[in-house]
Each structure stands twice: as structure tokens, then as C-alpha cells.
Length: 339
Image (cartoon, rainbow, N blue to C red; front, side, top):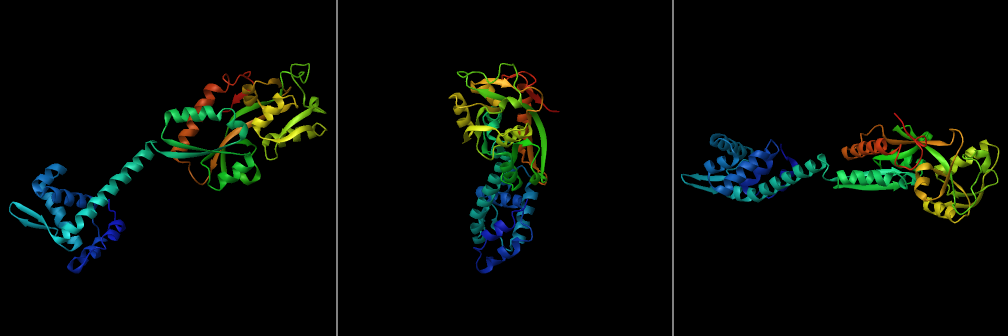
């Protein structure tokens, strides 16, 4: 390992006859040579330094000589029983110590990242997913890797696709199908989730039947999310496909606000099953299989996610395998893990 330009920049101290030290460095001073030099300088003894470094004394002496040739200056005054630093050696010693300390710091930092003791993951997710299984996934990941910083960007799928494509996220949980600008992304479908109608337990149920039809939403007062929510576009599209425009009593809210408005009896709302199951609201499932959405995890095709992000993806899959069918409070058909 050769720190090269770093040491060269630090050797601008050279003066007089010692200027050749800086000029010679670029030809190949090695990190272990600086370590040998610093150990001899500290012990003032070649044999003792060789013992501390676990190398043969002749090998140590050869490397010191090679270092001196590269730097163009003697580093030690050699006399029987008396090893002393030359002026060049005195000037080099603090620089060598700093270089060795920096190299050790670099090694430690890289190892901490490689072993997932430090680092960060930037995850994007839709508001409904942030309100449902994402907290459990992040808790599980944090328990396993407490040194990794977690950064969450909450937004609609279209916004997340743009942010991920720009390299500002490592992973994103989005709703498929992906918008047209997602051609640069690779997505793996994880889960198919049933959408349900949520209503206030204090209000009359939205239907007398066990399941509700999309046509039953006609003229029903509805609470609707702000523009940009995937659920807003989806709900509006299915209502129009059924031949009517949805009727909004309140619109423009975020997830927590929509749940509060429904709880207050201002209207019903179409919600993801995982969110509705935790809300304390009355849940009425839809008839048929059209009112579903598919959740996928995406990353850029041209950049491999960092190791911490890959581990988060693994934890996410493990969590879904153990929790999707039973722990969300829905029938097994309501959430289905995709192969």
C-alpha cells in the first residue's frame, strides 16, 4: 500500500539538501517502510524494532536503506550501540506517524462500513406504507444493525421514482405499475394488498352486505387524499370506470388527517388494508379482485445498492414472509406475498 500523493504533499517541508526527499517520494515509498522507520526511530535499535514488527532484522535494515534511497537522504546516524535520527529523519518522523495514523483510521472506517457497524440507508416509501409495515421493518433492521443511519423520504410513487432515478435514494417502496419515467429502475414486486372501505364505527355501515361494490360508492360522501397520492388517482380512476365521479366531502389530507376525518364521521375512504387494520375504523372489503395494489421495491439499474441497502431489502423480505399473511389483522387473502 502506498499513500503516494498524500505523503508527497506533506513533505513540502524539505529544505536544502533534503529537497530530494520530496522529489524522490513519487517513485514508490511503501507504507510498511514508514512503519519500519517509525519503529526504529522510537526504539533507537534495529534488532528491537525487528522483534516488535515480527520481521527479520536484515529485512528491516534493507527496507530502511531502500526508503533512504527513495528519499535521497540518510534517516539515521548509525554507530555501534548508538542509533540517532539525522535532520531528515527528525523532519520525517512526525509526518510518518501522521500518515500511519491516517492509514489506520482509513482501515477502521472501511471495516466498520464493510461490517455494517456504520453507514446509512436512504429509503423512499409511500405515506400508506410508512403508516403500516415500514416502521416494523425499520425496527427489525435497527435491532440487527444499530449503527446504520436510516433516512426515510415519504412521497407518492411518481415523486419517489424521480428521486430514486436522481440517485437521492438507495431503495424505494412504490406502487406498480411504474410510471413511464421509471425505465432506469429495476423493481421487484413484493406484496399484493387488498384495498378496503374504511368508515367510522359510530356511523351506519356503508353497505348491508359483507362486501361492497365499487358502484356502492356512487353519491357516498368520501374523504379523499391530496393530489399526488397513488390512492387518490386509483380511486378516482375506478369510480370513473364504473361510470360516475366520486363525491368528496373533504379532500387534500395526508394519511393521518384522512383517518381522523373518517373517524369523525365526515365520510368513508378507500384505504390499503394494512393501514385500515391498524386504524380502529370499520373495515368493509370490496367484492371481486380488482381493488388491489401491488407493492414493489425498486433501485437504479446502473448502480448496485450499497451493502446496507441490500441488507435492508433482505430484512424487508424476511419480515413480509413472516408477517404478511397473519400479523396485519386481515384475512389471508387480503395480503399476499408475491414470489
